[in-house]
Image 1 (tube, rainbow, N blue to C red):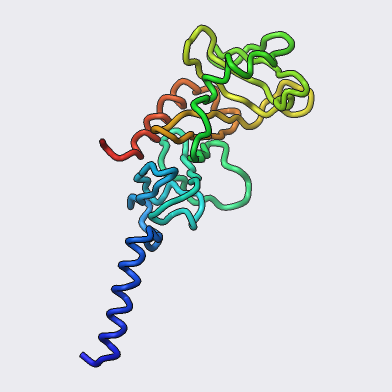
Image 2: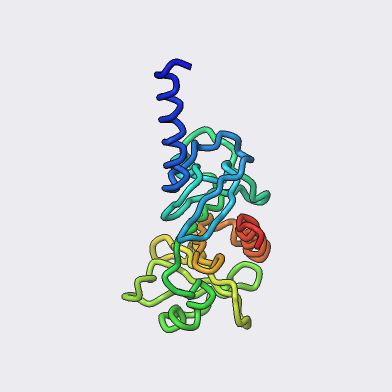
Length: 211
């Protein structure tokens, strides 16, 4: 082999070796079903490429956070859609390092309940809703929670104006040893909150490698 070919091959091997040592991302996956090995706050996840919302996150390696999109009710990757209108059946999930062990369920008694104001509102399928006090930081939201449970389903929904009309809801759940999953969904999906909660938890847990 000509010495220039040897030099190029050597440089290629050096770059590949450096990428492995430094944890540089591998080329982005093009197959939606191909698992992408990512790590957030040191926790490994194997996520099929089709779930990633943003192309720059669809690469193996370390990430500060990752943003996913799932189609309801399959909880599979979201199919391409024409137009700019938001799809009401998409659940958006952000996975990021958690600052503490308080998720939405734990915050009900420790944080949210002290800000409850006004009469209780009837929510979908047994949920109870309530407005939150001005100055709480949640005054533009309606809290819906499952009564009578130690670890209840709890979700915050953004309301329009002064009417008790929710639009977009958010919920936080713990994932692994040091991550939190923040998921957002359109109000109509709350009617299936029991199924939604259980199946999203199972889907996210399935992204964690087997011990």
